[in-house]
Structure formats: structure tokens, C-alpha cells
Length: 329
Image 1 (tube, one colour):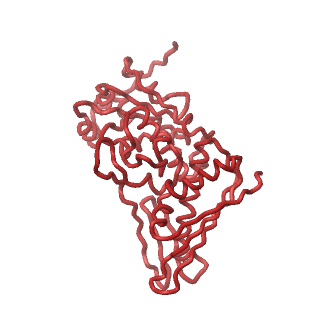
Image 2 (spheres, rainbow, N blue to C red; image 1 turned 45 degrees about the horizontal axis):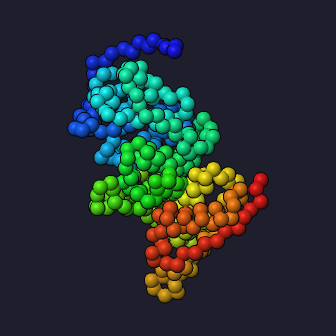
Image 3 (cartoon, rainbow, N blue to C red; image 1 turned 60 degrees about the vertical axis):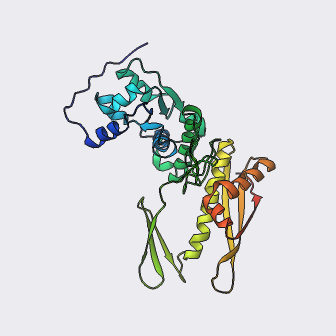
């Protein structure tokens, strides 16, 4: 086998946050070390997010996230986490296997479990990150993360024991990125496990106009009685968007190509006070090559299991759905 010889300048300084994290997670018995391709392309982005989901959300007690740059370039806490781990998982973006090859260069006896992320979500992604919607990165990463937890840690994802990606389950199903699943029991625990809270800030800007900001610098304008979406429009749009992503994730898991997907949501509110929604209907218009039975099941699962907005709303109102097929382009 051919090798490259690489000279890396040593540094005397250390990153306090990195070393503190390494010390905190140097447990006995050692945790499973999770490292990932950190490449600039979209496949590397999926691998990076999947590793973060495994170590910081789905298997927090069993795993520790490795800083690949730190572990590769200096022999301090991060490399020690890899060195002492009984199992090392390398989530690779593609067949180049960058993270495992890098670490084997400084730890020649290392035999990591290599997980090819692109073989799990099984979509031919472009190179550029800006060519893939952020929500779909979350769907793909959750598919990978759940399969890693199930197959390589021997556990059930703590936040999604029976749910799909971004609403996901042990079957590594697809789902909406607005949540990684509903509360469920973690491994060997009867205590419900919860994800970090979803938060938005809604600021009144005068008249009937409001500005919504999320933690990722996203913004949305809501305004009653104007060309903008009203709060009630946004309520129904949240259901449509969540159901849309949940269904896309399910179809992609089954390698079903979707050309077109439109979702129409209509809601009926009571005339009195409070004017709560009593009936909500969702119509999917979809162009895909799925058999009727597969599509029926995927939509039913999206609406009753995998979309947290639909599941939550279904506890308070009657939620129904149907679909129509569109001619594929």
C-alpha cells in the first residue's frame, strides 16, 4: 500500500474548551468514540450532522463526539478519547473514508467501525451545500444517526425510540426536521427523554404585523389583513411543511423518486369563542413511482407518526387527509 508522509507542526497551546470536553468524557468504562468526515461537500455535511446527532442527542450517555482536527493534529485529550475507546465509529461521507484514514495515520492499530453515510440515505447529492435544502440535510443525517445508534451502539435512540428521522425510528425513516421525534423512553430507563426546547421569538412591529425569528437566524413576517401570511396561515403552513418533509423522508428511505409534491391544508374553525380549529384536512398532490399501497402507508405514517405538528394537532382536532397523483415529468 502506498502512503504519504505528512509533517504537522506541533503546537504548545491547547483549546481549553476542547480539553475540558475531553476530560469530562474520559469516563470509565470509556465511551464509544464517534468521529466523522468533516468535508466541505454536501455528503460531508450529512456525515458531520449525523455524528453530532448520535453523540449529542440520540446516544449521549454511550458516545463521545471526536474533534477530528484536534485528534489528528495533536496528541492531547481528543486523541486520547479515540485511543482508549473500546469502539470507534467513523461516519464517512463517501468512499474516500477521510476520517478513518486520518486517524489510522496517527493511531496505526486503530480499527474503527466505518459507516458510509451515503449508502444509508442513498441519494446522489451534489457537491455544493447550498444546493441542498437545510431541512433535507437534517432528514438524511437523522437516517444515518439512527442506524448508527441501532447497529453500532446496541441502543435505541433516546429521543426517538419508535419515530423516524427528524421524526425517526430504528428503521431510519425520514421525517420533518422541526423535531427529532416525540418523547419516549431511553435505553434501560423509564424516564421520558426530551429534546432541547424548540424556540422562536415573535416581535410586534406595529398594527397587526409580527416578526418571527428562530435560533438559526431565520425570519418570517406574519401580518393579519395584508398580503403577508397571517398567524393562522402560518399555523396551517407549519402542518403542511412538516407533513411534506415527513412524507419525503419516508419515500426517500424506500428509494422512491418524487418529482412533485404539493400540500394543501384547509382548516375549519368554530364560529364562537374560542374559535379553535375543529377539522383540518390535508391534500397531497404528488408525482412519484410508488405503488398505491406503499404511498397510502407512507402518507398515513407521515400524518400519524412522523410529523410532530400533525400528531400534536390530531390530539385536539379531527385531522384527515387524501392524495392525488400528478403526472411525472
